Each structure stands twice: as structure tokens, then as C-alpha cells.
Image (cartoon, rainbow, N blue to C red):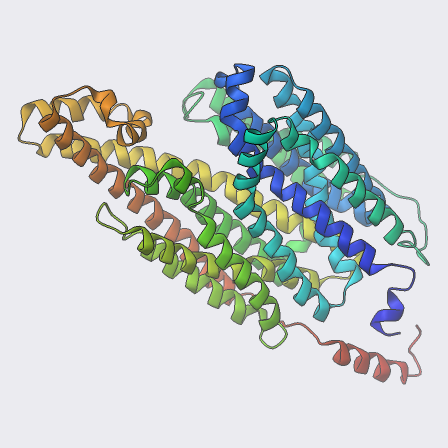
Length: 534
């Protein structure tokens, strides 16, 4: 049976179009909202909890990912994808009606459940409808969608807010969500054709131990050191609760008939190494690059508008590399592409760590292109490698696991590197204060060393200091140096995680994509075996 015959009854053109629409708008939502947030805060008067608008979406989308992956293996992708789109549409519509920040936070959490279902299922469906060779070509394109959404998201958000209303950044999802759902519903109508329907065993105990464990973990990672101290009773309670629930979850999964996360999968070398690599990439990447726009505006002096588009060169490089990487996989081993991508990312991090107050904007953009190109080679390859290793009956679980570990890595990375930034900044400020010969300047610097949260505001609007010109200039110069050195420390810390990832990439193994003609030849040879049954 050849590849095309295996896909009888599935309209790949409709499915592909539906996936592109669904994935693009789901990814776009995560970048558009940030642009509209100042306007939303002003209208809803919710500055004190505005961070929850993003956090609520992050928590629910992350928590639902491993669950929906496993359920899609049991019930099929079509049903779960449609449910995800409907939840996302309902959440989007409700967000547009929010009259208070509390309502918006709740609705964003609901929207996140839908988004957390759409993204991993889209990747899984790609694995279902395409052969390994075709998958390599298309995964790069889908990886490029994420980069494209990051590039145009802030622009679209700004246009919508300025021209219409912030409510429309949510309402725009509704018609396109319905279109995606309709196309998938029609295109996958024969998804289960020939599939033997068996009694399904749902791992309820796994779900009720995993969900609270992840929620507690994500809460403490997002708000520890900010809303409450790391050593506070709240932090200890959340960490302890998360640990307890996740340990119980691990014990439950060992005995479950259909575990949400089959721990035996980690015995597979490709599964273990690619997820470890995705975790490390998220750990180093997301935590470090969030400081780049701040560096560009605070240290290099670009305008807020320019700072908002700072990541564009990196994302364009990521798009190009994603497409190139997919093609390279048709000729090279996974290990080769992953290791090359990680080495280029290491170079990018190393170059970014050399940035300082004397650096030029062009230099920063060039370094970000290097970093983006490396990440663009790695990210789609991780998904292709893991899908290549398992049968289609398990693609939901392994694909969602890949998405999940990268997301958790990013969350932890943001927390860790933010703490590194604050600690380094505080230490740097105390050092420059101690070495300052001018007593007046030293006193100001010492006072600012305990207010690291306000240092970026000092760099952007130095007039807030209300100091004599000579003293103010000396203070700003010292703050710039302290902030720049802290930025270097952050990237060097991220570099450690990425460097470890190089060794993980080398241990992936010698696997590679089998071309369609190779698979057909193997099937022909097998069919000649008297013991072969189709």
C-alpha cells in the first residue's frame, strides 16, 4: 500500500488550508494582545492584575497540551480539534465583551484551553496526513507560521487598536476559527475509516493529579519573586503542592492502562533526547530574548516603536531557516541538522553577550539573525524527528509531549533568567556605587541599587531623577553600564543551557527520514515474504 492509498478518504488540501488558518490565528493571538495591552489597561482600569491576561492563557494552554494529545490518540484528531476551535472561538468572543480586567483574565484562560488544543493537534494532524518525506517539507512551512505571526502580530495589533477598537483583536478570530473548523470537519470526515473501534480507557486519575500539579508549578514560576518572595509561605506551599501532585502523577502513570504521559516513552532515545533538547532550547531562548527590546530601547536609545519590532530580523531568519532545515532533513541525519542549529545558536548567544552601550543597532540585528537562524534549524527538526520515530497511533501523545516540554522550558527560563537579571543588576549597581568617587553620585546609585525594577524606567526617561545635569549624566552612564553588564550575564547564563543542548543533540542517534520510494521498496520486499499480511 503506497502513501497516497493510505490517505484515501482524507482531503489533504482542505485539511492543510484549515490548519494554516487555525495555527496562524492561534499563534497571532499571543503577539497581538501585548500590543493592545496599554489601551486595555487604560479602559478597564486593571493595571494591578494585567499580567494575568497573559499568564492565564499560558497556564491553561500548557496544562491542556499533554491531555489533549493522548485523548486524540484515543478518540481521533478531528473531534478534539473541533472542540478546541469551538472553545477558542467562544473564549475570543467573550474576551471582546469583557468590561472588567477580571472578566478578561477568566476569558483568556478559557481561550487558552482552546489554543492549547489547536497547536499540538495541528502538528499531529500534519504527521497523520503526510509521509515522513512530505512532513519534512511542510513542517518547515508551519514552523515559519509562528515566526510570521511574531513579525506581523504587533503591527496588526497596533492597526486594529488605532483604527477600530481593542475588542477586535479578539473578534477577528471568530470568522477565521469557524472557517478552520469547517475545513477540518469536511477534510477529515473519513479520518477513522477502517479503524477498529475499541473500548476507551481514560486516565482520569492521571488528569486530576497532573492538572493541579502543573497549575501550582506555573503559578509559582510566574509570580515567585514578584508577587510573593521565593522564600515566602506561598512559594513553599505552591512548590510543595506541585511536587506532591507530580510525584503522585508519576506513580499513577506507571499503572494506568492508557496513561496521559507514558513514562516508558523516555526509554526511546529519540523521544528522550529531543524533548530534553526542546526543554533546554526553551530554557535558554525565551528567558534571554525577552530582554532584547529593553536593551535596544534603554541602552541603544531606539524609539518605543522601533523596540517593538526589534525581534523582526531574528524571526525572519527563523522563518528562512525553518524552510531550509526541512529540505536539509531529506539529505542529512537529524543529529547533523540539530547539532548544526544548536552550534549556530550558541554563536548567536555568544555574540549577543558582547553587546554594550557602544554597540550599533545594525550589529544587534545581525547577531539576532545568527541566533534566529540557529533556532529555525532546530525547532521544526525536533518535531519531525519525534514523529518519525513513532507509529501514527501514538503521534498525539508524543507530539503534545514535545510541545509541552518546550513550553515548560520557556516558562522556567523566563523565571530563572529574570532572577539572574535582577540579581546581577543589583550587584552591578552596588559595585558602581562603591567605586564612584563623587559622593552625590554614589548616594544616588546606592539608593537605586535596591530598586532594580525602576532602573529601566530611569534609562528611558532620565528626567524622573530630577538631578542636576552633571550628576544626572553620571548616574545614567553608571546605570547603563550596570544594566548592560547584567544583560551580558543573562546571555552567558542562557549560553550554558544552549551549550548543554549541543551535547544532547549529538546523542540523538543516527536516525534520518526515509524517502517515500525507500518505504515503498521495503513494503514491496515485505509483501514477497510468505509470512507478510497487509
